[in-house]
Length: 473
Image 1 (spheres, rainbow, N blue to C red):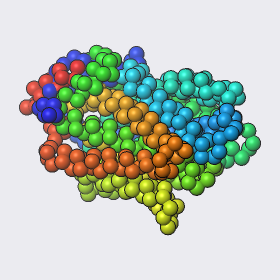
Image 2: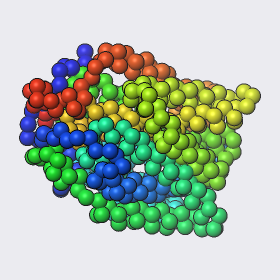
Image 3: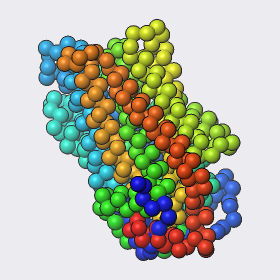
């Protein structure tokens, strides 16, 4: 049975990211007249936020192209007798932990700390040392600690939710997805250009420089907590650091939130194969190297931008967020099905792979829309808390999904597998996506009139808000 669907909140408790930024917020939202988005007081600061987010994504994906190449080179050095398929299989094994461990760090420390610039620099420095010494221990240790920086994306969404009216949030989240997509486009293209300069270390230097620029800009952003206080959205804060307690309290707070958060966890789990496995998958099937994969990732980023900046805002004009989420799951299902056919010997399998990649571009944007739904059914004073709890769950789902995606790819592309079938992970996760799609439709039907931030802040609903605060805290 799902938890009690009656919304329950209490008082006085808040979570924090770092020493000053709250994670659990309390207060009463003012019913101000709606301000047009282009006239909003903090529009310029939000544009700066998008620029910082774009630089962070660009450097992250540039770094992400470096890692698989480093792991393949490591396997070739340590296991010179391996053939090409064995090398790719072993590299997939190492990459599973490279992808997963930072998400585990986010799950454990996300409710406790904010984005730390020094962990990013240490991560990249450790990669340099591992490439130079052919020892992955340095990389794994500091890359795991660098997972703290995964909280950047949920911090961006929480920031937007703090300072903007709920009617603006879906579009602003979509624009954040477009910023992500532009970063995904430019980051790999930078890699393709600088990798032709000869040194394998130059991409690391550029990545470190970009990440430094990102964190130089952060102090110029006003503190969203102070803005929320000015608008009477937050009154007091008390910290909750335990991720297990935060998740438990979140899931039992509301039946509707419970199910939507599980949908959010599912898309994070099943998205790992589409986003992270393309490199080794394409290398196995199409003999792609770093340059081809860099161009592919740039093209994938272009589709993310098109979906996030043009198609999804248009859909949101005519359809509810929940219907757009359903469309997003249909796109994810189509992408998985096409990747399965792209991995077997059928006519035009390469074309099928490219067409399927177009639908992959919806997946990161769909994650953003689901977060907007979660935010929109939560009182303003608890949005930060709920989003952090949801992203802690997403971090755990990403951790498990990364391990599963890479290890299944490794197994079915190794000599030990009963059949050589690299797209097995897309088939398995495609079934999970289908089940989630059906479940999502049932959730929407079961909760035809879910609570909204505005309705929860009506005077007659203050008792429900106080009960929900008590449950979460």
